[in-house]
Image (cartoon, rainbow, N blue to C red; front, side, top):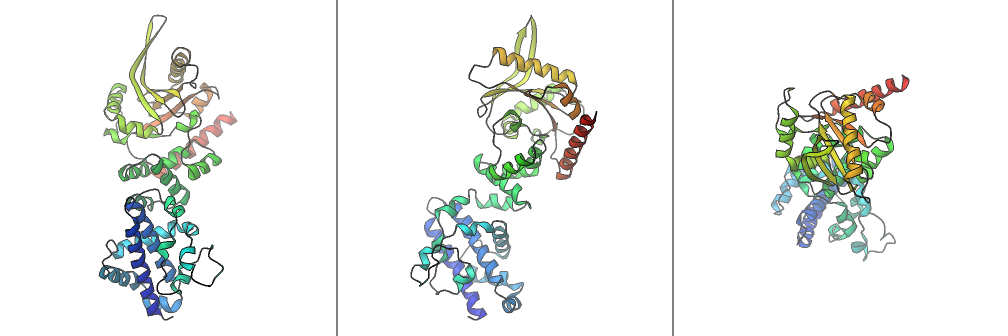
Amino acid sequence: MNNGFQFQRLVELCRETHQEMQRRSGRTVDTYLVVRNWLFGWYIVEFEKGGAERSVMYGKELIKRLAEQLKQAGIKGSSPTNLRKFREFYMAYAEIQQTVSVESFLHDHETNTSQQTVSVTSLVQLSQTADIAKSVTSEMLSRFTLGWSHYVALLTIDKPEERRFYEIEAAQNNWSVRELERQIASSLYERLAVSRNRDEIRQLAQQGLVIEKAADIIKNPLVLEFLGLEEKHAYSEEELESAIIDKLQSFLLELGKGFLFEARQKRFTFDNDHFYVDLVFYNRLLRCYVLVDLKRDKLTHQDLGQMQMYVNYFDRYVKTGDELPTIGIVLCRRKNVALVELTLPKEANIFASKYQLYLPSKEELKRELENIQAELSDFIRE
């Protein structure tokens, strides 16, 4: 087949796919739009693999020429910029082609490969009426769990394992595009990875954040940029607490999965002394209370001891027999990992986590991880 015919077949594949996705899209418009865009990217990549002659003939003009042809066919959203994005989308999710079955439109051809995945290059060489869009299976549709705008945000992430983590979390937690972008900007993946070993980091990429034990809910640092507070040292613990209450919904999202708010300045009395827990939450996935104490500056061993008392009280007098042990989190501006290791027993359900009032960069988190590892190494040697 000559190059001109191949290009026209490329245009036809896009047009036929667009029409097929429109026909199917009654209740799930965005899912079919995502699939359509992925298929367009697949066609373009396979067409570009067609050899040196085709490369010389079309070169950098391919996207521009294809966009013009699709516009003439009345296909919206196929500008040169979007077509490049579709190509990038396919390249990031190329493994999904293994879920495409071509049985439906190879049925009339004399072949024994109906159960195999066939490349688009082969499809272009089939009859003019072959329609790849009809090969889209429910398995393939189920692989795309988000809207197109979500995937555009995900394409800003280079590492496949990190991208997969955010895709899983966005789907499971029903994140809006804005919330997804915020979580990416706040480096959620790296913050969770800081407190996990290699196997647990691998699990993040494969399953998202799985809440099975107390340590799974800890992020370091906790990013509170949504409070709108300037980065300075003058804030009191009461001011920080009030700002959190005012933006409680955002704070719950930052804490993570399964959190419910119960009380602010929860009072309990012991031996005629009154004590106050800054913030009390309940995690329905772990079925336990989560106590949060706010410290405006450096963490001390007295802070950890105080939280240990709070946790002990809730375990003995508040939680019921079928609930799991209470978790304590001390939020501070500065912490010493070795101090935490030395003060708390290994089995303690108490954690110290830094908070910051601005979005961290990946470089900052990398330095944080290196500092933690160095502190732990020094502590072990001592």
